[in-house]
Structure formats: structure tokens, C-alpha cells
Image (cartoon, rainbow, N blue to C red; front, side):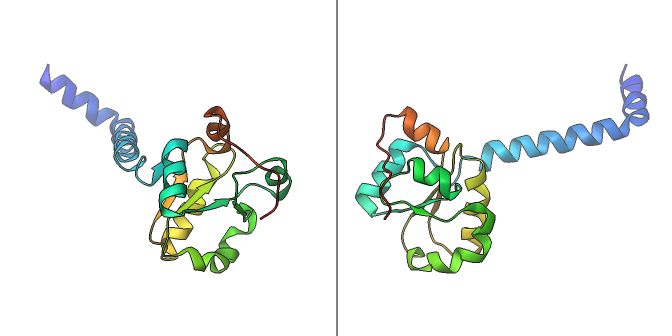
Length: 141
């Protein structure tokens, strides 16, 4: 039985290598994926207790339809070139949001690489914020 298993693995080594890579990535995602994420309740606590800055990376048209109070709009398509404009928030918590939480993850990575101390991705984005019945505004900052 063991010899057959070794022969099978030897004959299909590419599939087993791919399986190993996939399992490794899934494990990494489970262990590291939640780090640096905050849910709407946690974001509210960071905003109220530590005066966290909110950076919304959605397009300006979506931002205008409704955003978290006092959020700053820095669309993701030019985000890399505008991180310097956010430098005044380097020493305080920064919560980055988008529609669902996917695009804001890359913005979080860029901010961390730029030396921001505390960067959080809003888990679920504006959709989760709305689902939690938290307020949005249309007023510009």
C-alpha cells in the first residue's frame, strides 16, 4: 500500500506540489488574513476612543452617495501617488474602507509600506457598515 502511494505521488508530483502550495496559502490567509482587519463595531471604537482617521478608497461618485462621517476620499486608482497627502495621520490609527473590503486591502498594504503605524482594513467595507446600521453622510469634509 505504501509503495503504491509513493508511486502515485511520484507519477503526479505536479498536482501534489500544487496542493502543497494551495494548502500553504490557505494556512497563511487564515493565520495572517484577519490581522489588521477591524469590523464596524471595532472601527467605531477606534474612531471614538483613539480619533482614528478614515480613508475611503472608492471612486468620488460612490463616496458622494454616502460615506462614513469625517472620511477622506482618496480613490484607489491614484492611491499610490497620494500616500504623502495622508502623512499627517502616520502616528494615529487609520481605517481604510471601500465598498466590500477587497480594494482597501491593497491600500492598507501601501500605507504599511509607507511607514504608517496602525492601519486597519474595514472588514466588509461600507456594505458591512450599512448592515450594522451605522450612519453615513453625504457632506464633504
